[in-house]
Image (cartoon, rainbow, N blue to C red; front, side, top):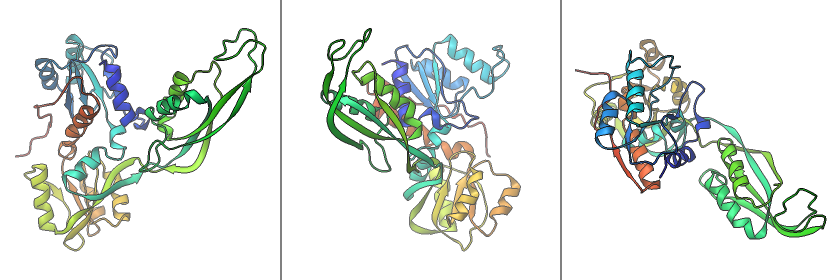
Length: 364
């Protein structure tokens, strides 16, 4: 398997088009045409993580956080970012980041945290709503299934909890090949008829480019008739954070003990709850305090995230149990999430999880 095959698998799961403007997800270092020996999964890229990859003969590191955020103006080893990039290049270790695009998919980073806490009936907390599209095209009947499968593999046909959705009408198509044409069927200057299927598939905006490319790669015609139609349907299956219910209502004291045990925390900062009981819980892996108003509006009893300022706790006082559980701590289950997904889709190489603790913050 090539590194580009891994890219395709990850970007079908969490398309790069979902990442925020400030982000830098994707392949950051490495040759996408190289073979994969094995993959190491980590939350961050550090010198220790790269050395671990070299020791384990892993020539690809997939991390949640991108090692390169700002423009690199030099490679002189003056900081850890430059040293990491140099070390990766010298040892031919590819670096791939899957960051805010993984935050925004249903089942992504926040869902991993929610699952660890045992939340039920989870859904996205703050939806990133966008209109969906219909792709309409005409395909020779004998190629209808091949083209449909290619479109589905590229991400078409998904709506909510359904996939492989399409509408097909059969009919007769006609065309006359002109000079310099290379017809799939027929002769120059002679009107030709062809049994065709009109295929319509749903496409979320983040898959539009991949689906159109798949159409051109799988369709047998030299000239392809197709159209994009904007629908009234909205794709509500992406956004930040997650919301769910505890299996049973917890007292504030029970919930605090649960958080400490599951996330292996010695302590964390929090505000008092409204009435001492916790049932409906919102979570956001990483720095998700911007979702506080969404959690309050959703009538949540608690909101767990990280990187909360002193003054923000005043906004939550007597309204919601607001907890700063730490950035690394809130995203630690992302390592399992990524590793398990790659293993489920690619069985040709080993996938290991880092043994290095990359959390730069020490609490004692």
